[in-house]
Structures are given as structure tokens and as C-alpha cells.
Image (cartoon, rainbow, N blue to C red; front, side, top):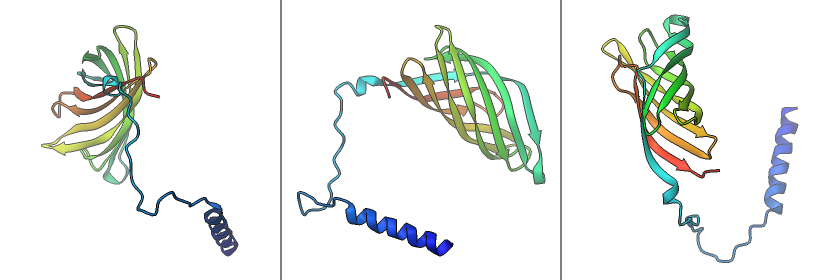
Length: 175
């Protein structure tokens, strides 16, 4: 069975290569060319900075398999200030190597702005341990219904602050 699947995949690959149009206008090496730029491209991107927190935790599920620390659905909320203002809801999950520990984190972030806007997206990164405390270093991509996105790096200002300083790029008019 495996040999016939292997033979079939080779036959399909050979057929695709044989039927592909590989003709070229020149005999030189392939040249990489930049995509055409819109004259308004730079106007559609701008720096963005905001602070989330201090965050308060309202729930968390924890387990300790094999001495590691796993937490799920750590629900946090707090104020947002800076280029975005309002309130944030953050849900984090992590697989850390100990208590306290280092390891990857993943979750969601939603920001409700004071002007009625909504930003929703994901946050990924890692917790790093130092002096018996852990500190979050992450990246978030937030989308708004107004055809805008914020791609930011978020760093917990100190290991015990529960406050994220986020800086990055605001993209307006993206698809």
C-alpha cells in the first residue's frame, strides 16, 4: 500500500512538472523585483504605542504535570492608555518549565476603546524567569472592524507590574 501511494505521488509530481510552462523570455538568472508600491503606502502605516494595565486576574486553571507549570484561561483585565484608550481583556495560557518558570505563552487580547472601537486579536510570546519572578515578552496582532490592524511587541514593564508596554505599527486600509 505504501509503495503504491509513493509511486502515485511520484507520477503526479512528474506529470505536473512535464505539463508546466517553463518557457522564459530571457536566458539569464531569475531576477527578483520589488512589488509595485502605492504612493499612499507610507501614509497607511504609523507608529503606535499604548500601555495595558495594571491588569487584575479574575481566574486561572493550573496544573503541574511532571513538575512543570501549565496554566490555562488566565483571565486578566485593566485600563489601556496611550494611542489607544479604554479597557482590555487578556486571556493567557502557558507551558512553563517550573513554578515560577520560563516557557511559551499564547492567548487573546481585546481592547474596547473609549470612542466605541473594538480591537481583537492574539498574543504570543514567552515568560522569562529572573530573581524568582516571571516576566512576559510577547507580540500581539489586533484587528479593528474599521479596516485597521496593530502589530505590536508587548513587554511587561517589570516582573511584578502586571502592566504591558506595547509598541509597534498601525496599518490602516489593509486587506
